[in-house]
Length: 463
Image (tube, rainbow, N blue to C red; front, top):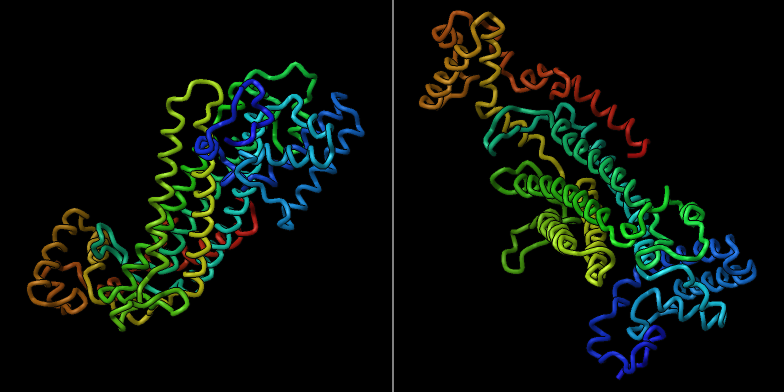
């Protein structure tokens, strides 16, 4: 049997070894150690500030906690499963260093509010890191966009050729998605940045603590107003997982496009060796592993969101051991999003090259300028629906004759409708089709240049 825990004097025997292993979280919550120490330092300072312990005792605790942090960072403090969790590991080491004073650290505190504090400090930190990575991703997309304002690319609806676009306009759509991602994380952080410290196990404490003081020391906006809610709330974790899922949705959409664009059927981009692999049997292959992995890992993050929702849906107030399972999902979500944003940033900056010749040929060899023929007639007074139906017949006839709209003679155009004139050819040229769409938010080159400048200006601001 295992050694009895310091908290188990109410019990006559220790945990069965297999149950002790099953119950332990030190294998993954060691991730929180630096945040646990930060929270403990603030708690010790608050205890001294309120006179619950002496100033000298508070200083001893702080020095001991700082030493533990240094030991951990040097690799000298590596708790094992007998510590059960990171909180006990730190407290036990603190007691070894400071004697009975170390046993006073847990005054007016429970592991329930302690782990809630640690988790919030961790997530607040990681949200800032992810936002920084999103800004770098935006910077790369904006740089590519600025070089491709007048590069044309087919635009699609239903994965069918629709209308030609500025390549910059296409990429800036992902900048806008990423902007929302960063703003969502900033909003989530408002709910993350509330302190549960001092809520106790569930009902608060009889000691004259100052929860606002400890919250301020840790940079929280305020403490939880209800102790039950303080120890049992995981809404912030679910909100983060939801925001993380949307980040992955956006990365996965771009990943899917790159996979398509790099295929022989599209050939819009080339994959560079730095971000592609080969086949073990087919020497001609170059595989888009990075976007495929991002697309695959998206489901992993979705799964964590679903898991957290199911974890919480049936829990009565207040804390339940089920909540131990929130951390692995949260940690993996953070690491997956960090890695995927970084990988897509590198892929876009170094791993692909756009084939402008192929893109130009693509927009010149389809009927994606058909809407512009209808617009041309409408501008000359023909009711749009009438023009729309007429152009549909033109496309049908051209397809049957193996022609594109640009191949029709002026006589053929005028036989269809007398409003057609020589300027029809300029109106349906792909570059003019794109340039003409200068409505706000449109793909016209003037608007896209403005959008690039606006997006670049925004890079220096916070989400």
